[in-house]
Image (cartoon, rainbow, N blue to C red; front, side, top):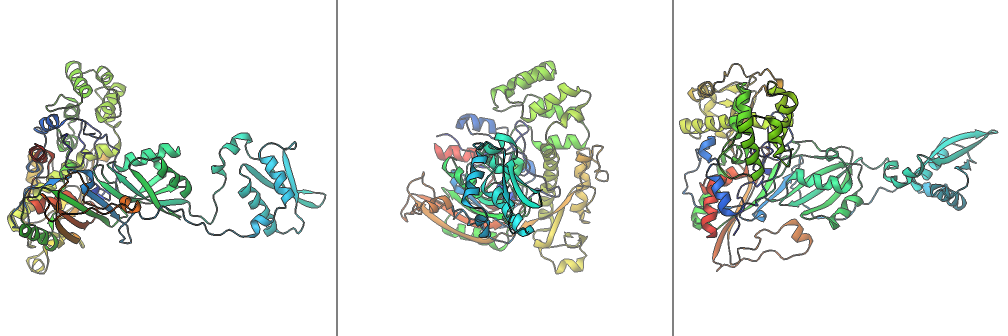
Length: 609
């Protein structure tokens, strides 16, 4: 049985193209920079179970990234997370608070255009214009005399010709006191081949919004596929948040001036993608505009009793979970992304290059191993670059920069890596600091607001008196930066010591390179999911999907049938989370189980054997 990565299969590492807060659980922008998640190289799961497990010996565990505490006191139990991608279903919640579904594949009816439009041309004129359009007319234009000459009438004739005869342009000419509308070719035969560019009704919104349903594909991959089929640049598409690969996800996408018909036509030829719920609007989508995501998660092979499950889920509903940054923010190999981030912040560029390019333990693709060996041996960027078939990975981009600008200009060379990928490293460092400090805060004061804590509203430090009336759900902790304040209790003071131990000065978080100056941000320490529900289900066939997807409903496929006497037990839970929070961290609180790939690999390997 081949191992399937139980966390996000798009886990990014410096050896692949890194991602910012990649789990679809984040939905919105990672934090203050509202950056878009960069496109990542996928870990396509081609390694067999043994190789992958071997590789993960060098991976991170939760303890390595400051994820230490739980808020509930129930007994944990084991289970398999993301055994099948259909065990993780995500529906985006739009800014109006509506959970999005793909439930309509029809094309929207257009607003009726003015009826006179088609009647302003006689049959004879239409025949002449048709011949002109197809270059069958001996003349290079057609003149139409306007009898009852008014501006409104002329406008209707102009519009009728352009609408009905793509590729033709019109102008008004006066001859001997009579007015004619002259139709002629806009741009030779090419115009006829691309009529799409010529007409978009004024009463139709410029952007076609649609719901994208995807299986086992990340958002950028899906957009790249749509771009290729439609022959568009990927930046013609906009969305509110990225969803990860190893899941079934449903989200809204908008595209500029592409008709619903063309989009709907793609349903015939796309694998693992479905488009529907089309409508036209006058605006694109913006990153972070969503209210959050609704999750349906299946944890298979659970060991907990029904009572344990009920206790755990009730606690999740009432208290919530610690809002840690999940494992997928830190990469999966022997060189964690936060180490690179720390080196950037320390302005130690030689270490940045070393961490990204040096040989590392654990299984990697053969060409990357050869590239690293070449770099270690020769320190020659061009020689190392020759070992890479795909130059778009982080190593390739950095080596290309070094060969262009030389090893004395590392900052410029590093700049060849896309901005979002570069920022991911420093945000990863901030995230480890945040996780670590929140663990200390929970350890020191538990789940009550105390003097010295921070609240977000009018961001200030609580007095002892204020703390009495505040709940733990009001409390935030800062990501380190030059534009934040810190809690005034001893845990808050620990930020300075932690950064100092890493060779950084908390009072000087501005960097010579503006991009790497950290403003900081605030993040709530406890999140209480909404719409929490759950059931324990029993089933006999481990290969069946346990969630009825939107696509299956559209195809009128029956819902999964559960057998009360089944030999396997699974926990099926549903909940909604705000943007920038990790569903894996909610699940961790329920199971009390390490969600790192390293630990889940050990579990899965046991389960499969």
